[in-house]
Image 1 (cartoon, rainbow, N blue to C red):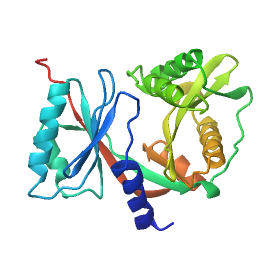
Image 2: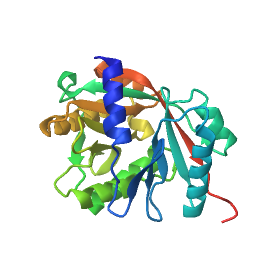
Image 3: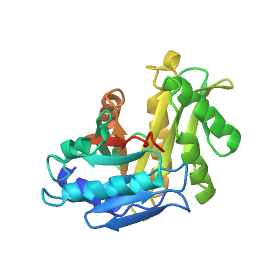
Length: 262
């Protein structure tokens, strides 16, 4: 894979060419920033920026002002190849807080496995209705130490916008949900994304995550997507690289906490 070429394509199609994730949201390009703005309860954030030492501080201040007006938390999603080189330090100085960095992994769909063996007693089920979404949320509550997750909201929006899609998949042991993961198809681009993979502690290390990857890759391949993209944690990265994913850099979210005075 030509890393520089694919990274530039990813920037152009997924970041610079981003689309709203729900009907009432909007994507705006203002100067050197592309931002996503949602109605209350949705996601606000910066998806792409191309700034320099002379323009960065003013652009950051403008986003902070807007996000404070909108209320709630906001995110500036940075990548290791973004300019200027000291953008992270400037964001921290403006009140953003760095989250854990992740690795931007990409693979050609054609080289990835489309099937993977499951542990005995485990079956996979596509998420197609509200009762399934509740099971996904239950998995995430256990897999991520009861942290609040937006995955339910994201799946509902995907089903509303494209009822024929399969936005997520569940792994079940009998009727008990033990793992879940989301698939994001980006129409008009070459990239499908793997998101929100989580397995409850007692079922980790048995191949379920690999099976969920293969299940989603198969759907993306059938829809004609050339590349699969993942923002991988330190836990999922080794698994994904063994499957054929390659690292194109790192990505770090910087969160602007909600204004405590509001």
